[in-house]
Length: 125
View 1 (cartoon, rainbow, N blue to C red):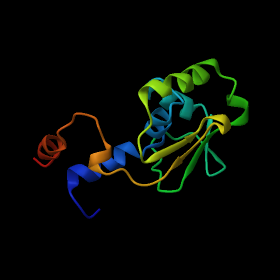
View 2: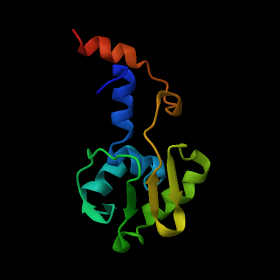
View 3: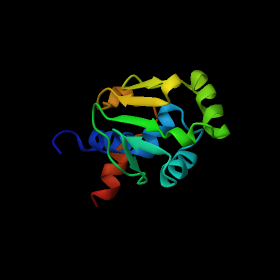
């Protein structure tokens, strides 16, 4: 990829399906989100998926499957997402249990306190 290595790394990590499902509020933690994905509760653009590391691109639609919409933990997490907030690069339709990736996240959109340059330096040795 062209660009700054650390920013590319963060962008790739943020666009993983398990992270996007967490950011949209379908789960209260990334671990819970990963388990929901592995159990086949999500579709991307209408196709069932069960691989948490799938990279999403701008315009992809992540939707909770019809039979999974009654899961209590998911409904509780969706109610709690109001307090946590949703990043600007994502859009959530709570009534339809659907989220859209509006664009690729840039460094300014990622609020996690991380020094990506240190990670790049460690792995470049």
